[in-house]
Image (cartoon, rainbow, N blue to C red; front, side, top):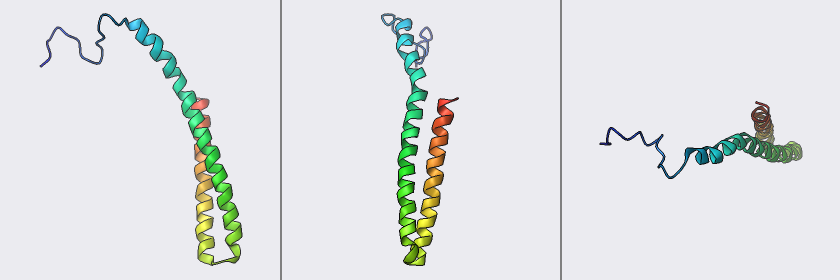
Length: 97
């Protein structure tokens, strides 16, 4: 059991580490995280959009082939575009929040 005179581990810093230094390195990093998250989701949205375009091309090519493959490609194209749209909207909502 911990001694009663010591503060909990979450708020305790050794005396040789001034808390100002910890805040100096933590706060700018915390302000940088939304931009990093927005960049990640924007890049992912662009990659998903390119995959959705390729899937739409595969759907167009498969129109003359088996009807079952055409329906599967149509559903895959639809959900690929929805996924890309959601990633892009999420990236913009993080950036403009």
